[in-house]
Length: 313
Image (cartoon, rainbow, N blue to C red; front, side, top):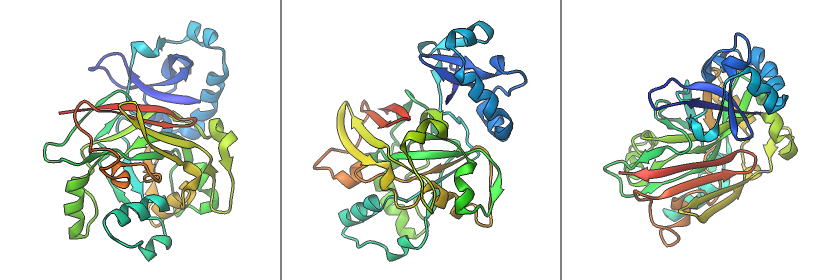
């Protein structure tokens, strides 16, 4: 099933819904006692996921007679989690790491192969599909990053790799926007990216539960991999194309690492890092200039939809 956060106007509260074709069904009006927002649903995910699956299997006409529903055009879709509890972004695609470093004349980091690494970013700066993303005033090198995120649906710490996939409520497309010139300067201090990243992150267009991706799942000792094509376009022109199954570290490995001596909570977001070719930094300015106001960036991932945003001043 596909879950969304939506509201009817820009001043309204975000509510959770199920996507049924081209309609959004309000969950709280369709399922007795169900919470109205996505974070509250995830807090009790083991209780609500089966009733929601049952709802998603009903005929849309049947649902619409007993619940509030709206066409997708009537509502404003937000990030499936408008305010995640936390956001960790990993660095899990070898091709991205190698190419991005080679662009700066750097060799590969041998320690990268020892364990998956991540940085924390701003959980209060999430944007949904269709939203405008403001270009930071001080950057000239604005970049997109083509990623996938998993959403945690169960509390846990010191989670074993073999069990970690069971902690995932669903997946979304993630755009980890980057101000590359700011990032380049601040990482010299040795603490990783901060102001180069914290102005915006896009997530969406909806949360897709793992059962919908079973056709693409490939199991292994280190957790599931998914054979999903990933594409990025700027102003309708394709710039990036990669494969999610090429990831070096699985989400199971990332969850195990993130939860070591630390508790993960429902509503935590974990990003995969950028797929190979998935940003202008890798492609080079000879392939495309840095992003400017007016540019429309579309990230598309098989099975997960299209996440579209427009850059503004």
